[in-house]
Amino acid sequence: MNKEYKDMINLWSGKIKDIKPHAHWKEGLGEEYFNYLGDVQFQHLKYFIEKHNIHNIFNIMEYGSGGGCNGRLLCKEFNHFFAVDISEPNLKEFAKQMKLFYNDNFTLIHYDGNNPDTLGDQIRNIDFIFSTAVFQHLPSLDYSLKVLKNFNRMLINNGHICIQYRENPYPDKPRKNTEYLKNYIRMLTFTDNEIKEQLKQSNFELLELKKFNKLSKTYKWVLGRKK
Image (tube, rainbow, N blue to C red; front, top):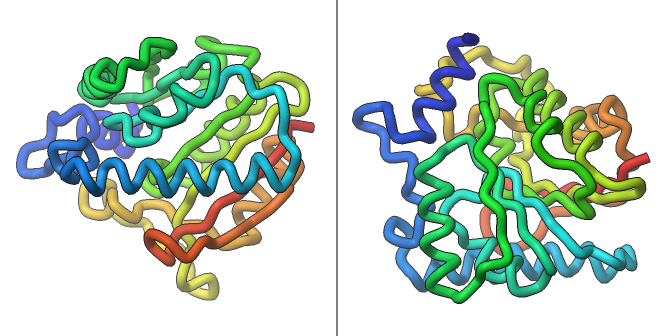
């Protein structure tokens, strides 16, 4: 097993001492900010859907569903929600939160983070894939490209992806190779050219890159459509 992959899996599963990976749960964020975060990210998603006239989204998948701040509203908005995570504790917390909001139209999917190619074997015919605050924690550009290629396999024809990622603030400097456990918060950042190239190589049409004023200004969002 690749060491960076192993560290990623162990960290988000809570197996690394002295690191608390579940600060994004409602218990860690506090209920007010937990709800606010989900509200804002849902508004951003609706912006893209409405601007680009995306219709007939019957099911939606969240890559990295975490503690459920997005699922709280997405489960209510769409017919079915697929919660995907490499962390079983995250999926258990997600299910716990959805029950509190009387949401039951979801499916939990745990996949092997050591092999992102298995994701495309577990689920198909998805209308829309959504992901926030996850790509920054992936171990490398090669890994993120594998994930995007599997997104393409999983989507229906002309299906869409909407991904939040951290912008590379130093595009002219060479990327540093750092240990995952020392830099997992900002392990992976993207320049505009890098995210465009990743979409191109994974056979997505780039529809829009956008930075919103709310939340961290280091985040950007990309909307793509399967070719």
